[in-house]
Amino acid sequence: MTIETTVYNGNQTTIPSKIRKKHNIKPKDIVEWKENKEGKIEVSFRKKISFKDIKGKVKLDQKTNSVDLKKELYK
Image (cartoon, rainbow, N blue to C red; front, side, top):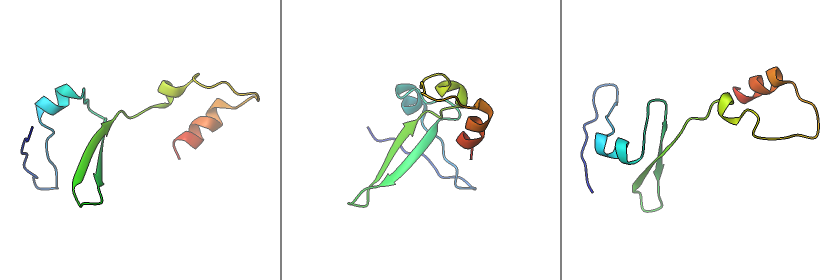
């Protein structure tokens, strides 16, 4: 499937709705651009993770300070 978009002033472009829907792309998701060895551009999408998304997912053997952890996360 080939879909064309235009690069506008400010170097902005739009992700076509067909692709957004197929890959469940939402505002704040991250678009990653990678140039492979052949010089072709590969585009991928990933969800932006927040502190709330990872809070409580890991158990540690030692006590931690959540305020300090949050500060470290957003550095």
